[in-house]
Image 1 (cartoon, each protein chain N blue to C red):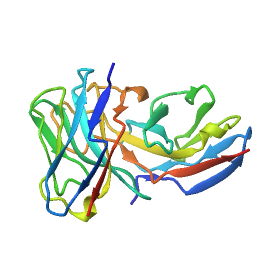
Image 2: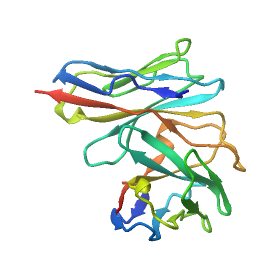
Image 3: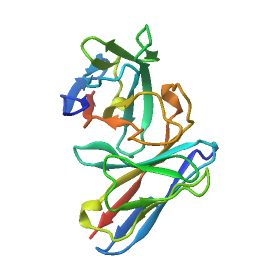
Image 4: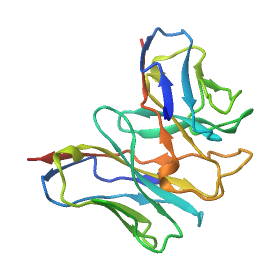
Length: 121
Length: 116
């Protein structure tokens, strides 16, 4: 079973409109973190926003906000007032459990397959 | 601040050749990892390390070796390259702590590898 599911392979949005990118996750661990990354055509991974499983409030970072619905296991990214420069691939990712100091297990990020967002003028 | 530096940025290999992708960070991070990104697959964890002398396998370790002799460096070795290893490779590093905040994971700029 996929741990991170992004159901929108691609989206076209008009400039200045708000955008919601969907992400659902699957974990039985009570402690986890959810991340969103932006990958422009140049290829680098740009961190956007983070939500911890115990955080009481939804995370916000400038035009980015995370709509965290824990019971539904969803962590949708909302971009307000989209801009042409927002055109990129967007990845949702999860890290489960506290980090282990001595290794053992896959202590890394699990990524979704991404959503290709295109902002149209 | 150089952050996470990956070299080379582009490489073409013939099947069966060996090569090493270099990753270096100057932030004294304990945790380093390698991911590969294939079209339509997102990033997948290859190997990771929680400190010098300690490495472990991720989701897709076959065909790759790693070592961590220093805190700064975490090279990824392809011993006998195969076309299936054509991919974009990312190195990432972070501090190792009991809690974590989102913006402490640093990615390199990626290495584009083609195996023909």
